[in-house]
Length: 408
Ligand SMILES: [Zn+2]
Image (cartoon, protein in one colour):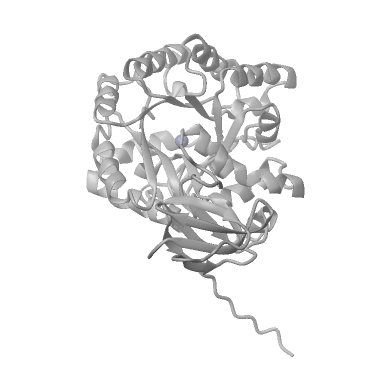
């Protein structure tokens, strides 16, 4: 296939052509000449930059059928998965993770930053599998890997060394999980020191519970500023902010903004895991997405878990996460639906540091064409992703067929 011309798509709210050449967006405008291009007629169809998964766990995907589900008072998902991880082989991880990546590409994802668990249970088998996958799918998706301490770093004698080993092997981000250790601040300090030593950005799972006394995102923000790492630190979950008093929350949000922390909300997992034992009011566990966006924070949403005890119905379709977010975060008014795609495109691209990303001449030709005229319709109808384009090449083409027989 030669250079592509997308004819008549909806770009920035109006009908325009998009010419792709040498893996980049060459031009955007009405009535572009087709010379030398293969033409795809996408008249009236919404064009967005490729979707970006900024927080996802392919290494522990598709294992829900290997254990039992969650129940009030029962074992946590961490406990259930930790036991299963001992049995993971690199090939097993590779096969399951590849299925995640294939589904993600099919659903419009062109870049993904994935957590790779490193601990005494799975050691470096996830790193081995995910690095192999990263190379095998390089033409279809940018797959970046986080060396992630899901089990904490205080609970065994090997995780700290294994994390350093993974960074030496080329993983480009370091991921902490303070709530898995007793000394949360000690945990956070170790991650900042190690990130500084290796010159890598940080990504924390933090403040996942509902007791503000355990808050850590304020400390993470303070450390980010003190160490000059503004813009290089990401925090996922932040569920705790939802239960804080508005004044206290505002102080934390101001601090996060000052530290230029990137926030990632994980709505599907929060809905499945949180508040199982609440007998009166069921806390939804979603952080204050709209409020934080309005305060000027870079906020994204991501899929997180795929068919495991953390989210048995998890599926790497970010358009689905956009609909869930509209429902659970009170962001479903038409004006809000219009900007919700930012949370799965430009914002996560910024969070994970993608360069030359977006819908403009010179940007990488990573696009998704949706069978809808605008974002509200795309989210509401969960529109088909007609074309997924990576580096100027169509990597997924999808159609949806239905037959109606309504009678005369
Ligand atoms: Zn996660």
